[in-house]
Amino acid sequence: MSNGKIFGKQGFFAKIGKRNWLIIGAVLLVAVAVYLNYIWFYDPMSSIGYGDNNMQDQYGNGQNSAGTGNNVSESYFTSAQLSREKARDEALDVLKTVVESEDALQETKDTALADISRIALDMEQEANIETLVMAKGFAQCVAVKSGDQISVIVESDGLLPSQVAQIKEIVYKETGIKPAGVTIIEKAAEA
Image (tube, rainbow, N blue to C red; front, side):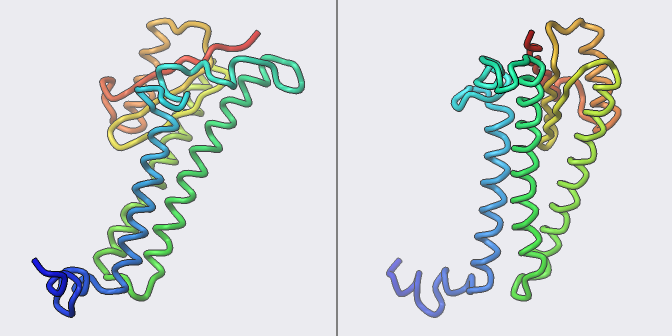
């Protein structure tokens, strides 16, 4: 295929159109935000120090400026929640840009609106899970939902089988995700 057929007036790139390049870019930014959210909160290879394989990262290895272990643990959970919210806010901003774009196709706007609704539902479900898990006696909890998978990070010095069952039951009731899709991560409480 010659360059004229690719880049010319009737080529592939010409058919996409300028307005759709913005939409394609926005969708790519959302994909990157979702990927980063996955890597930060569920990193099975532990390549960047977060994830379910090594939750004893820099937040759990020392004391904060106040010198209390509980504040270190709170700092970890607060940081995890803020990182999750930042990734979601960035994704929502991109989706809102697509929805508000006058040049975007209606189908693309509808997809963006559906994604916004899904993210809002995920946020609500995560908040409900965190509240209900803490109501069961856990001092700290962060839930991160990604599709039909969810990671629940709890502050614990060792989970009992009954506690694992309680957490999985809460997740199932709130999201419909079956126990096989639930990863429970223990973050040891600092002394």
